[in-house]
Length: 149
Image 1 (cartoon, one colour):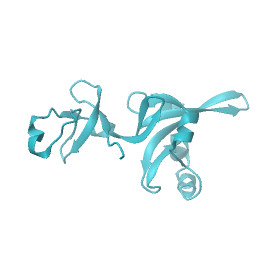
Image 2 (cartoon, helix red, strand yellow):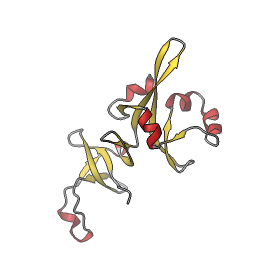
Image 3 (tube, helix red, strand yellow):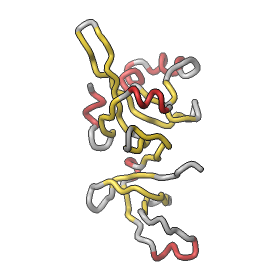
Image 4 (tube, helix red, strand yellow):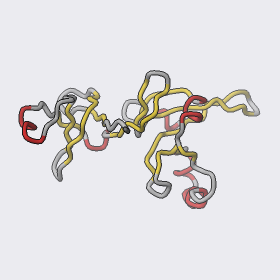
């Protein structure tokens, strides 16, 4: 069975919380309780999180680290001037119905080419083989400047 888990940054202290997600029109909340029963949900501590920071666990790990939507990974690519780090963000892409490695530089600078590539081989679907070949760098909420690299 697939493990369903979310993370988000708490409004009250700025730290990530991992657990089960509840969203309404007004707020997003996460509980770290594993004993959720519909009849007793009022006795569970729910923590309000910033909605833009909510990310789902994708079901894969890099070592012992769970990988979430919004995580940043990099690959070392051989270039003319030595090795270069190339950063990718794990994102849900509804057009592919899967989590993918998105190169944000490509999407920002050439959106039309990116849309064409959707129907070919790019972006690459996240799988364990690709994940094992990359390095974990952080996430878009705590390390947004990595996307400018």
